Length: 323
Length: 207
Image (cartoon, rainbow over all chains, first blue to last red; front, side, top):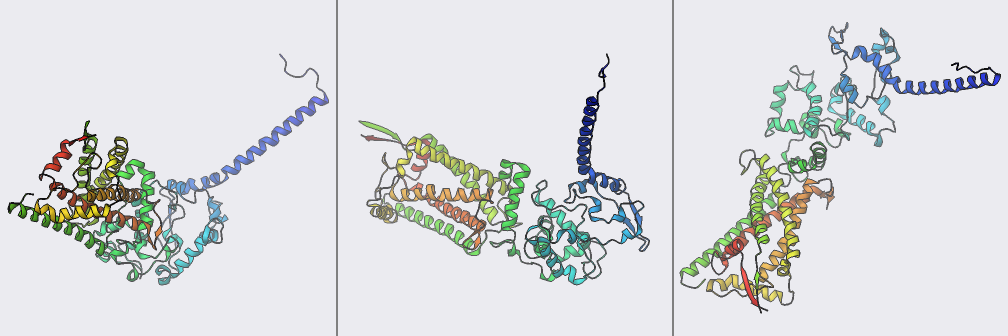
């Protein structure tokens, strides 16, 4: 059976033309939409084809050191920067391969995006910058450390709203940043301790030092205040060195840690289990010498009272009086 | 017409003795938690923590059962306080415990079908069961739901106030328990009151 019209008229040609045109417009439109959505991942795919290899590195001709150029794809996918294209941060010189040699000298700065941005309320990163420039890290060697010294932009992920890990893993993650330099066997020029052994020695005053280091972030004692001010790292001599700073009613951990822990545990292990296994208890948080002595005193007084009363009844009974 | 009443019905006795077990565990674990040190603890910290949580929840459920039972079974009648002449009755009962008991006087307010407690017992139990226990339970539950606790209270951390309240009520109830056990020996015989709470006590009254 022939599907062509028996007679091709001008109207038929017009109709086919317009149908084709409209289809083409829609097709192009959808293609553009799809491309826009995948542009970042396609672009990144080109970069990560090489940089996703675990062994990618090169020898820096200036220093002779091997430089790791590999990116952890899993960590990148979970990081806060996962939605960005590589070239959003890296210069156009990296778009071509081999990369332009000038591209190697690019100066990346977190604050070029993070500063004066409506995305970050309360001028968060301005506060971070102020804290950092006042910190021991910056004051000791202004040019030595940058954001990237501690934060890897390819893996960095904030804790806010994420509950896929417990307190201890968050503590470890943050402490690993500090230990990355401070636990090295070779001390940093004039800033670091003398290695892991020395680090433990300096914290020996802490009872159960290892348990403390697993449960509390370094910045809780080595900074003052909230997350923005957590970049205001103090010198070791100014760090909190009092048990009661945490183990007291005014604990620097009480409100934040306890409430955070309860919330995290509930998300992690379920309601009933989290309530029964609730481990958000800071030893000594409710300790107060007056209350302690008051409590012990009340119990002793009661015991003495009933003991004396009982003795009196026993003596009265021995005297032959009816009880 | 003579009517026989059970002063200590079975449900009340079961609640009472389960409460005893719960309280003993909570006291031991509570002391272990509050006075925790690395080397001198009654119970290891982690075990005490879990036990305290479990028995705290059990005690709270028990208190709800007590409340329900009291209103459903009519036991609440013994908690109805007659304010008229209360002070005189309290003094009379205190005088008995302070003086009369050594002279072998009779109990000034023996149990009746309408009130099995003497005035001092009635006031104390009212306070313990309807003020202290809810306070203890609420402050304990707030530690399970710290996000509900006030951030600040009287310029102090809200959770600290909750913790102190829990501790203070706990200590008060320990003192109460000691007094309660001791005064249970002040019945007709030393063991009479214990037997009543174990096996019940029937009271026959003319109606």
